Length: 130
Image 1 (cartoon, rainbow, N blue to C red):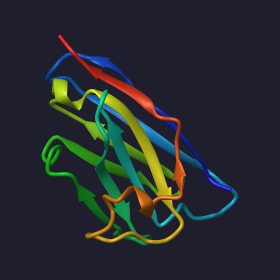
Image 2: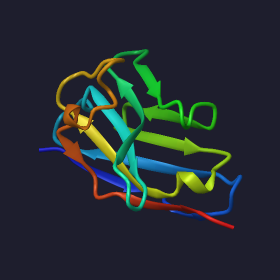
Image 3: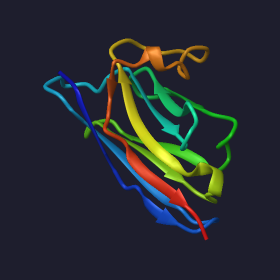
Image 4: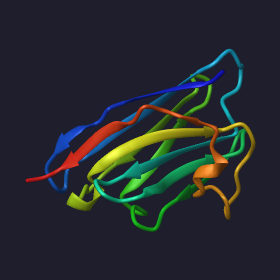
């Protein structure tokens, strides 16, 4: 069984920064091979933000075009922690952010699909407002 625990949400002004952390709690030595962040704005569907694909020394990462250049991922593999660093935040980044993990690897053309992920965290709220 895999549990995902997100921390780090909060309220920030436009242009500010936040860091979200996702801790994987499981008995497995390795983290899941596919780990990502999704978000859901009020009244909208769930949107993929970023993901780490695969394991090993240099796993691949994928970043949504809507946050590219502002958001980045930091993977602390040994601790099974995936961090989403968010800079230059905008009002449209407001929403609930979810960590997700898949039992199988995800790929460049699949990482953004919710059905690739078997485990989801409870979500953490991010509010960007002046």
